[in-house]
Amino acid sequence: MSPGRVAWNDPPGGFHPASAPDYLPLPRLRELQLQRLQGVVARAHERVPLFRRRMEERGLDPGALRALPDLGRLPFTVKSDLRDTYPFGLFASPMEEIVRLHASSGTTGKPIVVAYTKADLEVWTEVMVRTFAACGLHRGDIVQNAYGYGLFTGGLGAHYGAEALGATVIPTSGGNTERQLMVLQDFGATALCCTPSYFLHLVERARELQVDLSRLRVGVFGAEPWSEAMRQRIQEESGIRAYDIYGLSEIIGPGVGAECAAQDGLHLFEDHFYPEIIDPVTGEVLPEGAEGELVLTTLSKQAMPMIRYRTRDVTALVSEPCRCGRTLRRIRRIGRRSDDMFIIRGVNVFPSQVETALLEVKGTLPHYQIVLTRAKGLDEMEVKVEVTPELFSDKIRELEGLHRRLEAAIDHVLGIRAKVTLVEPRSLARSEGKAKRVTDLRSV
Image 1 (tube, rainbow, N blue to C red):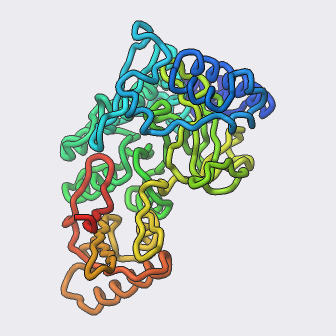
Image 2: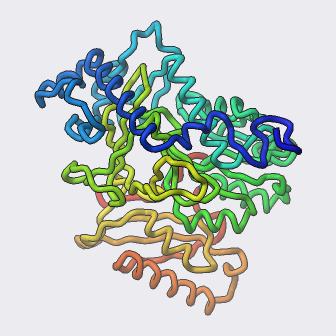
Image 3: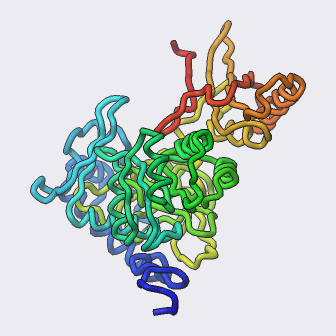
């Protein structure tokens, strides 16, 4: 053991043993992926009627999968498949082997239900350990986990991963901002897990209450799209390192991918999740490097294997070597989903584009809301954005200048004009979970 280290996973040098697959030689990784892919497809074909029927409709059987590119011949799985087979129709394990159930909120219809065997939970913990290790956490860190506990996968996924890493976990769950801040300060948390928009709210409130967050050094943020400009703003305002993580309940929960110290894309834990990028319209597999919709196949999931699950998240695969030495491919930061796009005057717009335009202009806070209306048959977009307390005064000339710069920035990024409304600090609703950026009143 190196001098100065008291445990095997303490810095400097080395890496957590669970991270060893992150550095597998590529031929070995591809061999492992094919072996696991053949196993999971055979399992799904044998045990999941929906998947077996769709393969038979295409004249395919598990023996057709001889190489990784053959995966592109198999049918997709989409979110409505999980809803249509609610609650247990996609399970590949009998209930006596299932030890955990999670579910979505079901606010847009039937919830989706996901299941885990004991082995699935062990994989989940393993990939979360690798997630935290990639973000620079180790034994001795105090991790405050403000992701929601319960049916949502975020809380428990992060909790068990941080514990297995050897960190001290504070399970505050979401909400109750004043209590979150008290615990952050009094318990000396060094890392925080939550959505990036909620962290901004915590920073803002901490400033008002004069809460000391100086021991906090890492933010592990996920569960909603956020931009690189937002990361820069978070790091500048709080002094922490802000890392992006990626996951979705349908695949396993958090732990599908994570940034490393290079902050240059998110490494996918490819030994458990095989990625493809497709054209979201045609469904054709796109070449590496092209932007499109991320499709994931679980390679080791027992209870509920997902074959070619369409995530609706838009990104690109990066295979160039990372400075950290991991051989795992990365995905570009996911700033948008193929289904959160709205169309205004014939132009496709994503909320993350508006965020990027706003944060290019100094004098605004990263709190905004987009309101879509229709008047006399014409679509209108209003962007409400908070300005800093320093500017929100009687300096009319400065506010007018800021207003012009914001409208120009949006026009430059989107190619359309929007009405910008400057609002006072803390006047827009804050979210304790995923931020709701768009209010579409056009169909009301």
